[in-house]
Length: 596
Figure 1 (cartoon, rainbow, N blue to C red):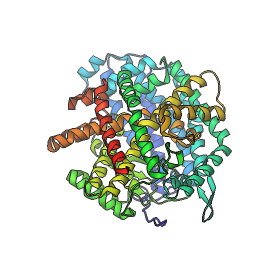
Figure 2 (cartoon, rainbow, N blue to C red):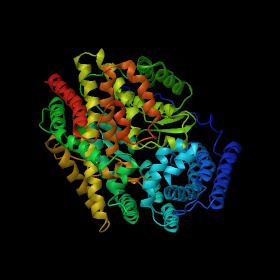
Figure 3 (tube, helix red, strand yellow):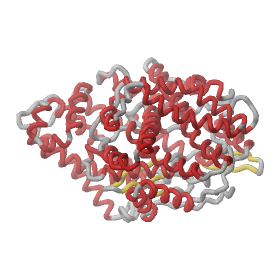
Figure 4 (tube, helix red, strand yellow):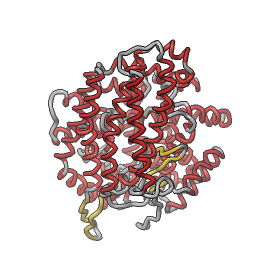
C-alpha cells in the first residue's frame, strides 16, 4: 500500500486573513470589549448568585441575547486560533493568542456561574410565564434551578475560575503541548525511522505484524520518558475536579458528569450493565481475530487494529470523499449537499504533519460552518472517520438557527449523528463486498465497537479508580499504569494476551480536559443510541428522516430520556441497550463465520 498521502489542509483565510491580520485583531479586541460590557450589564442589573428580583423577566430578556451573541463570537475567535494550535503545536503566535484568551475564558466562566446562580434563584414558573426569551430557553432555565443547588458562593466560584487558569487549564495545555511534540525512534525492518507520536501509533494499522510490534514497543518506551509530567497533569486535573465536585455538593464527580450529560444514573447503570453482559461476545470477536492473524488464542495489544481481510481499494482521500458524498446523498439531499460543501470550501485538515494533534475532531466555528481535523491513512478506517466527523458537522448544521444556549449538546447526544453517519457508510460498503472485503469491513466496524464498548468500559473503571485514589493522595506513574492494566484485564479478559497498554492514560487527551471528568461513557451511549436509531430508520426511512433532523436540532432543549421518548424508546431500562448490542453480536457471529 502506498505511503504517500494526498489530503487537504483546511482553509483558514475564509474566516480571517491570518492571526496577525487587522481583521482578526479587531475581532479579538471586540470580543474583549464585548465581555467587559457584558460584565458591566451584569453588575448594573445586580445579577448575583442567590439574589431574587421581581423584574427578573426584563433582565433576562436583555441579558440572554447578549450572552448568546458573546458565545457565538467567542466560538469563532477561539476556533480560528485552534485551527493553528491543533495543526502546529510550535506555532508561537497561535499559542500566545490562545494564552491571551484565557483571562476571557476565566471571566466568562465567572459570568456564567453568576448567571446560572441568579436564574436558579428566581421563580422559574414566573420567568416562563412572563418572558418569551425564557420560554425559548426553558430547558436552560430548569437546569439552572438544579445547578444553582450545586454552586459554591459567588466569591468561591470566582476564585475557582481564576485558579483554574493556573490549574487544570494549564495542565491540560501541558499535556497537549508535550504529547503533540513527542517523536519516536522506531527500529523497523527496513531501517530506523524517527516519526511523530501520531505516526508511530498509526503503525498499529500496518499489515506487517513485525512493524506493529516494534512500533508498540517503541511507543511504550517513549511514553515512559514523559510519564512524570503527564502523571503530574493527571493528578492536578483529577484532584481539582474531585475537590470542586465535593465543594459544590455532588456526591461524586460521576454524579456531576451524569448531570452534565443530560442523563441519569438509572440510564447509565442500564447501559453499563448491558455492556458488561456483552463482553463475552466482544471477546469472541477478539479470539476470532487472533485466530485469523496468528492462530493464537488471545490477541496481542499491537494486533488490535491490524487489518484482516482484503482491502482491494486503496482509499486515497479523494476516493474516500467521493464515496462519503455518494452515500450521504443516498440518505438525503440535505446531507449530501452538506458533505459536498465541506469538501468544496476546504473545511477539513487531513494532511499528516509534525506537531499536529493526534486523533480527530469536529468543531463548529461560525453560523452553520464546521472544521474537521483528522490524519488520513489510505484505508477504509479513514473513510469511516471522515463520515463520523462530518456527522458532527451535519449535527451542527441542524442546530443552526438555535441560540448558543439552545445548542449546548451533552456528549451523550453529541455522538448521535456521527455514529449514524458511520453506520450509513459501513452498510453501504458491505452491500457490494465479497467475503474477503466483508471481513475487512466487519473488522473495522467491530474495531470501533470493541473500542467503544470494551475499551470505554476499561477507561470508565480506570477513571473511577483514579478519582477514588486521588481523593487520598497523588498517584505515581507506576500506579497509574497498574490501574490501567487492571481495568483492561477486567474488560478485555481472555480476549487479549498478556500484552496490553499501561500508558493509555497518557495517550488519551480526554482525561486531561480541564474541569471535566468521565468523558468515556458518552461515546458508548452515542454508539448504542445511534445503532438503535438506525434500526428504526431501516423500518420506515421516510418517516424517520424528518423526525431525525428535528431530534438533532433539539439536543440542547431536553434531556436524553425525554428526546428518546420521541421514538418510543425507554433508555432507562436495559432492553434498549441489549437490542443495540445484539446488532453488534450479529456482526461478531458473521465475522467469526467468515474467518473460519
